[in-house]
Amino acid sequence: MTRPTANGAKKRKNGFTLVELMVVIVIIGLLGTVVMINVLPSLDKANVTKAQADIAQLKNAAEQYRIDNFAFPASIEALKSPPAGLAQPDRYRPGGYVRDIPNDPWGNPYQIRIPAPDGGPYEIYSMGADGAPGGEGENADITAG
Image (cartoon, rainbow, N blue to C red):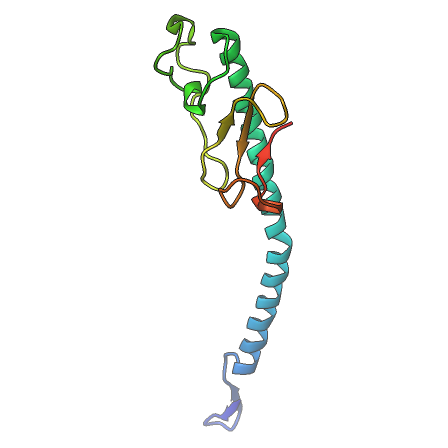
């Protein structure tokens, strides 16, 4: 919109119209939607991969525990501090087998099962995003090979 000045020249008013602002907001919204559609599935995959890496680290610590104490730990906490009633407490590694026991990417504690359902001696697992046994997709239980 222009306004005439005192000498008759027209002066342009600076700024954006409502229509221009609405077009920009719609474009930003569309771009945000496209980005979210592409990023969210990657986040789910990253959480599963992190859980598998944590479980692999805990499995290594459990194997070291077994070598030192001739049995697998009855709980994940036994990897950080010696459990009560340990047959030979002097065999427990000073400082434990892990510095910290992480939670899974969804904030739930990792679990250990002795024996494992597949016939193995033990299994360390996460219950997935829902924090409940079983499930499908992101909610499925996660173990590391």
